[in-house]
Length: 165
Image (tube, rainbow, N blue to C red; front, side, top):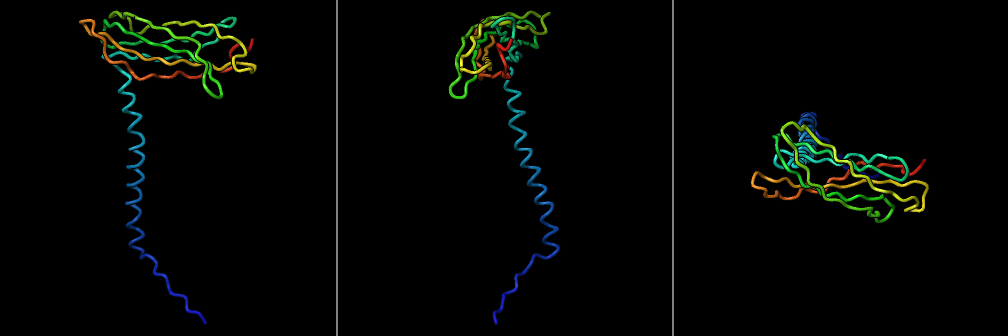
């Protein structure tokens, strides 16, 4: 006959005491995950200006508009923008082209949209349609004309089914 040792189970008080501790741990963990997203939003502005790559739009023929939205909160600013356009592939993406823009916003300008058209060839990845996106980075001049540091590259949404006409 074998004797099985008895296992001590936690008391009811110990179990109840664990509930607030676990709840607090879950709350703190979720707050820690949310914090970096908020911090990233604050980093998107340089000297009161933001630059956003908009989702590309399929234009007539094989043309795609890789638009950029520029917004400055505090009046007169000159913004320098670097843009790189890509066709998304399964492996390495195909670089379609790049541009450099300099735009001046006056006090009356709430924002500007920059149109950037590019020709997208068919069958870049030997499939029926192409998927394209673009990335932008920007810097802002101060009153003396000195350029700020460049922002991180920001990627647009991907436009799918390009050249399916």
